[in-house]
Length: 210
Image 1: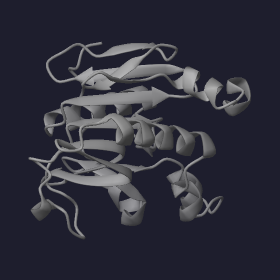
Image 2: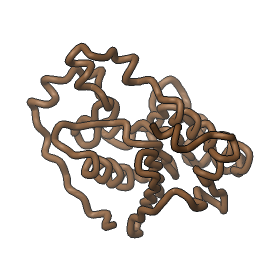
Image 3: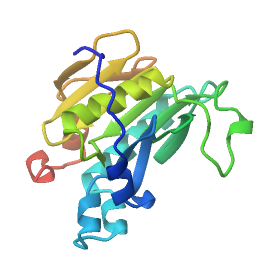
Image 4: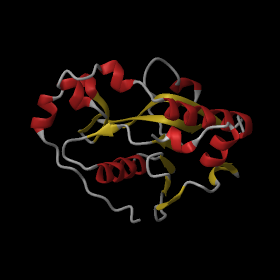
């Protein structure tokens, strides 16, 4: 897959109709809303309901967190999880499921009550959690991925539970998509395998994906 993706024109009408608290991320002034924001606007769900992670999402984020915690060189890297924020530039705010930062980049001075102003080395995402009325999911994923790479992230790994696919996008390389039933390297030889892990934990994958 080529990493050359569109730049979405900013539409004032979208930003005026949707309250700012429903914006999860923003890239160059383009808002990416929490997935399900339309249901909040329609009164079908609460904000808290669309923010909450599903069980499978939580299981996979926990799996990756423990894996990295056990195997990653903690002298070189920090692993942050759970809606990790990063300010990649003016009007460029990202949130991530699992983020790996170099300690030399995410220094003590960057860690406070505000968003870090440095990019992670690696961003791992479990499913698409944002929406924009002007973009279909595939275009939105491409848009966000390219903006993250442009902002200094070296590698983005997407895990898509519905289609059982993995996408890996690295700076300066073709993006690749493949079935998730293989080992996927995160960094420094550390690999994960989603179906293998779920089976080892005794989960019925077909039931999980319902």
